[in-house]
Amino acid sequence: MTNYFFYIIIILGIVFYFYNSNNKSKKAIEVLNNGGILIDVRTPQEFASGNYKNSINIPLNTIEQNLEKIKLYNKKIILVCASGMRSGQANEILNRNGIDSVNGGSWSKLK
Image (cartoon, rainbow, N blue to C red; front, top):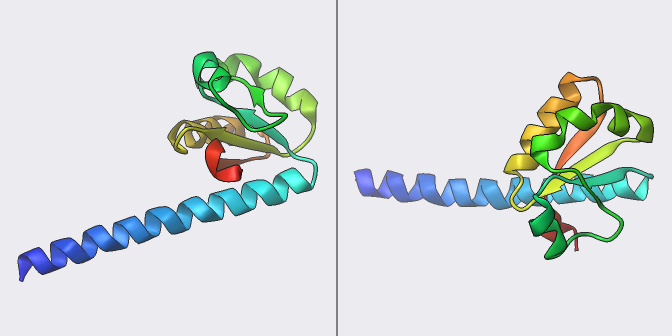
């Protein structure tokens, strides 16, 4: 019986992951279509290996040093990375500093 619950929890976790990931992508595309700015927080090497058209690369480890630059965009910011983890961290930093942003999750899901 215990194994049964374990499998149900795993299946629900997988469903939640994909559902949440799709919601992030839909929200990101909606913001992009309304003039938002897409910032990719992956490393420059990751960004160079592939990125979303017209996205700006500001690695997560430099987000705080670039807050004033980001504020100058004066538009809603969509943050992306490889999986959504780093963009989630960047989103928290921007929101904490009064910048309107959303976690767009994985850049590759925006294609």
